[in-house]
Image (cartoon, rainbow, N blue to C red; front, side, top):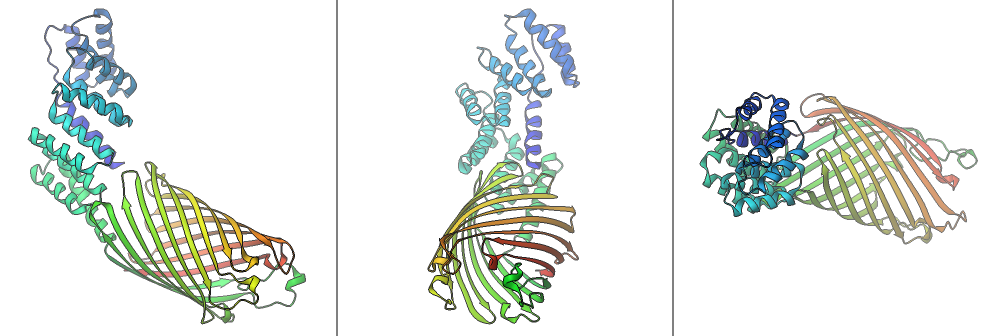
Amino acid sequence: MRLKFVVSAFFVILFLDSHSFAATSLSETYQEGISNYQAGKYEEALDTFMKLYYKSSPSENDPVYEYYIGLTQKQLGNRNMAVYFFEKCVNRDKAVSDAYTELIDLYFQQGNIQKAEEIVRKAEEKGIKPAEVFFQKGLIFAKKGLKKEAIDSLSSAKNTDPKLSSAVDFQIAMVEMGSGNYESAKQALKNIIATDPTSTLADYARQYTEMLARSAEEQKAWNFSIGMGYLYDTNVILKPLDTAVSNGITGERDSAIINTLSAGYTKLFSGGYSLSAQYSLYSSRHSTQETYDVLSNSLSFIGSKNYEWGSANILAQGTYAWINDQEYLSALTFSPIFRIKLADNFYTDLSLGYTTKNYLQPPLAKTEDRDSKGMTYGFGIGWLPFSGKVFVNAKYEHSYENTVGDNWDYRGDRYYGVVSYSPIQQLRLQAYADIFKQKFDNKHTLFGVKRQDGIYTYGASLTWDIWKKLSITQSVSTTRGRSNIVVYDYKRNQYQTMLEYKF
């Protein structure tokens, strides 16, 4: 939002100063309209220009009237009417030259890049206001994601009119930032401050320089975190709800000590490319149910490329887990993910994933062998409606696994939604829902029916940043596993407190 404000403010500064209000052979009524316009009395100015235009038409002064009608309509927020009159003006033999740049600006603001380029070509053919047109052409190239062409055109604007140096450097800095070339962006911002340290653009340049400095600190190459927590689980063993099959089963309630560790490395490259690697460790140690103790390691790599429309990412992840200090599972996942910007603070994710799983303990029977290969595809949306205080995310995934054992082949649909709210910077509230429905392909060899499961999980958490790098999170969740096979029908609640230190 700040960038849009800066661009809009610049257009006002650049083009309003260039308007010439002097005219020959025009009436005192016209001069009154000009005076009202300069005084900000746009309704009165528009009334004057419209009367002159329709009373005298056709007249040699029509291009001038059309131009000023377009200006006042623009100031009043009537952009379509402004476009109409600017279009009429530029199609005249004796068009007002500023009408071209105003029309390009309006089409650019409306997102009509094709029409903006059309007026740019007309202006170039007639040699009208070359510096300003070079500048606007550079903005159009930047909007289209053509970095080199944008910088070349912006540089031509500065070479044609050195008075545009600061404005050009600012836009070049924005292009470089969008491409991930932060050092080049910093240099362009420094040029603005050095050229005119007291200007409004210099103030913006300082703000962006500080932002880049903070971003560099937040995105430092290495980052680490360690965590410790306490978990209470009301059904560790997933004891069935049906008493006919669960009679005599006890010990389902237990507590555990949770430990986490992560180490990450991020490398930023020119052109908007980046590469991240992260190692994560998770450990849970139960008080009594030691056979459910977990030790899990994962290593992931993410390659990313930023574009004007969003980003393209490739994830590769490996996981190796132990249960009760015995090898349990190894898994590999490969997933391309595309994030597409739909509007300010609103995006969609498209993903595709391939996963192989290898369970490292021999199954009780061949039909229970869960070694598998599977695919997942999904899409999601994300929205930050209120300056980062609220975040909304929803996601749908369809997955299937082909397993060695017939009892575990399935097709699944997952629906996930989360809402996060930060009333103050140090506090975050979060609520989520996760629904996973599975339909198994084959009749269960023991129960004689095709299994159908629905796992419904709901939860909430509260995170408080005690200090800059230390936070505490209290979370609660409930899971209801529904199945047409009673041994898989259960309910569990979990309550967890975690301390995490990041450095």
